[in-house]
Each structure stands twice: as structure tokens, then as C-alpha cells.
Length: 565
Image 1: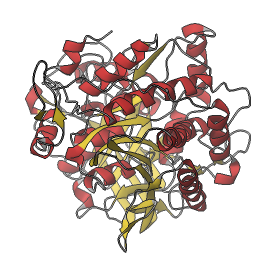
Image 2: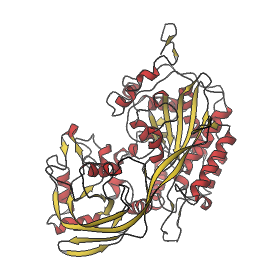
Image 3: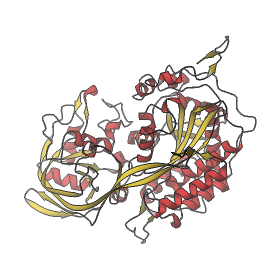
Image 4: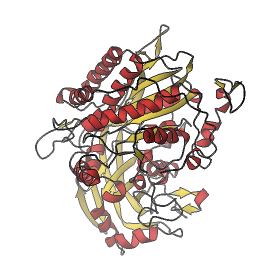
């Protein structure tokens, strides 16, 4: 278990309020019913800007009201609404794009969603018109001056398509300039697209490999062969190159072979700091028209106002959206129900709201927020972080739930990523009180920290964690969980098969909810301002708002009289 001294790393935490006499309890049947409802075909996969969103927002608003919350969204005529409007750019190909690869002088058509998955443009263009753009292998697509790393040495990327590996150079070896096995943000495909845009590239193609990506090609196909979204940006081309997409590993191997090398040789070269870009004997043509428009989606927000310091907040959050209706699977099913991802997290959010609204009123306000467009790039939470309804500097912490367990109680629990910060310390302590141990994220190497909505809050400095289910099950242990997880990743994740099952056991989710309630209750009834560790990339953003937290709460130092903290 991580030690307190490591986690706090200089954080100024004070003693928290004791646990409430009546510990909150959660009904597994209520949790089950929410997941069954939200994951039903009637909600059409809950895609933003669809009829499925309309049904979802109405359901969440109704459930928040019935739970006892007050509206916590946008202000209108001096009153809060249940929603925060989130303007989004929506882009979708009007027909499957025509794609062809010229490889060593021979032109071959590529099937969208098979060898390649091209995303509809979000750089402001209404069409994709790429004619014979040359391909260049650019290693892992990383430019990190602070680590002395540059995969683009001497390359003029303008007019070229960069072919890059997923993850970062340390993933397979487990050590190096990028902190070892745990992925840095440089390993995320979003970063690679952003870097391509900064360099003026015509496009970026990420090579898919199941282990470093942590999901199979079916997930890539289903996530990218549909409408794309982004927050509305003043200059979208600064964030997105004209072409963004993925290619299968086998196609990458063909590119390298035709250029006189091999996939293995190029991957080995890319792991070295002296790597230089390698022009490939290939060019790509992509022709396709897109329908682009600005649509409005919604975060759904409710609040339990604080009794003593209502301007200070603790946030519970989770994303309500999934992939909607798409291409049929082998059985002909076209609805991506998203029962696990993230019906489970939203079920927890609703019942957590009920527990706070019907329990003792906390000193700080507790906000409950179901965010939109997580599956499109964490967009609902990114919009909130840029346009907070409640001051980020006075948000004590945020607890995100994205995919919870349905196999019954576990002896342990975890969070996404390997960050060190005071909010995690509180979670570990509360878990220990309940006889549960913290297990560091076994999948940190796949960049889990950067793949859920808490990340956008962290970038704004807000201490935020994403809770994940334990893997040491009381019934079946780690072996049963590994088998279930392997099947989920291969056959359910971002696929129509993510549907509710009557044999799921929600008692473990109820146990997790009780733990997370204790964490939020402790923080909401204390003067704690959890900090990021001294070496965290998010600490500087938090420190910029330090003045907002001065003099906000009476603090009693050890052996002394109350003072203002």
C-alpha cells in the first residue's frame, strides 16, 4: 500500500470530521434498476445530440429531483437549471470515405473500418481531400524537450502524414525516459494528433496494437467510424490536423516491408532517443464529404447546498453517454447500449445523490454531475473545467466513477493511474477502516489516468480521482475477474454486447458506493484542501488558485486555538 508520506508529499491536510453515526447504505436493487434502464434499447445507446440523449437527460433530471437534489446547472432568470449547456462541433461523413494507398507504386483501396479507421474531420473542414500525401514513420510521435526526446528531428511535417506507434517508448521495456511502465500523456492518441497539428502535418495515423492500446481493433473501429465531436474552438486546426485515424498493425508491417525494413526493426529504433523520422515508400489518398454543425449537448447537474460553506464544493461525477447506434455486429445488433460503460457509474451517481440528499446536510456543497461526450474525448468534463459552474479553486476534490463492478464484493479497490495526491490518501484510509486494501492500478501502462473525465479536472488543478472496481473478488478471487475482464475487453467494450445481464451482482457496487460516500462526506465536513504531490504535473495549476482557499475555513492546529486556514 502507498504510504501516507508518499501520497501527501507536502499536502497540508488537517484532521477530518469523524464518520457520521449512521453510515450511508446503498440498495443493490436500485443500482441494478438504473443500469437496466439506462442500458436498455429504449435509450438507443445514449449518444450526444440524439433522441437517446433527450431521454437520458430527462431520466437523470427526474432521478436527481426524486433523490432530493436541487438543480445545479446553468442560471436562467436567477434560477438554476438541471443542465449545463455544452456546445459541440459535430462532424460525420455523409458516406464512407474513399481511401486508397499507393505502396511502392501499386495502388490498393482500403476499406474504412477494416485496415484503416479515419475519423470525420474536426479541424473545421467540411470535406477531406487528401491526394497522394506521403507517409513518414515518426516513431512514437513524441516531442518532449524536458526529457530530451524528439521523434521529429529535422522533419518538415507540412503536407505529410505521420505514422506513429501507440503508447510511449517505455511501455514494453518498463523503464526509460518516460517513467517506466505507466503511460504518460505523450502515449495517448489525443496527444499525437495534437502534436501533428502543431507541426502542420497533413495527418496522423496511429498504429493499433492490442496490448499497448489496451483494446482490440473492434473498439477502434466502433469508436472512430461514427460521428466525431469536439468542443467549439476558436481555431480547431490548431488542435486537429486534417486527417486523424488508426491503421491495423498488419498494414503498418506492409508499409515498412515495402520501404525495405520491418515492423520489428522500426519499433526497436523508435525506442531510442536518437531515432530520426523514416520516409516510407507510400502515399495516401482520402476523399470524403462531411456534414459539420454546432450542436448543444448537456451535462446534468444537481446539488446538495452546504450548510456552513456553500461556496466550497465536493464533486461526484460520471459520464452518461455511450456510442449510440452504429454498424451491426455479427448478430445484427446496432445499439451500443453501454450498460457497464457507463450505466454503472451513473447508477452510482444517482444513488450517491440520494444518500447525501437524505442524510445530514454537509458543511460544504456536494455537486453531482453526469457529463456528456466522454466517449468523444472527455468533452463534457473539458467544457465544465473551462466553464465551471462552481469555482475550481474552491472545489476540494472530485470523485469520478467510470465502469464499476458487477461481480459482487471485492477485497480491494483501485483508481486509474499512478498519481500521488491527498485525495487518494483519504480514499486509502477510508478503505482500510472497512477492511479493504488499495491496489495500485495494474493497467497504468495503458494510460488509464488520461482516459476518463477526472483527467480534465486534474489539468485544471482540481484534485480528482477515478475509482475502479477491485480485482480480488470475494467469490472467485482474481482469477474470476481476469477471465471476466478478458471477455469484456474482447467482446463487450465499445460493442453492442455491453448489455445488462440479470445474473450481475450489484452488492459489490453498493459496497463501493458506501466507501466513496465516506470519502466525500469526510471531505465535505472538513477543512481539508487535498494537494497534488510535489512532482505532479497538476500541482502548478492548483497552486495558481491557492489564494482563493485562504481564510475559508476555521482550522484548529494541534495544541492551539482556532485560526483561519
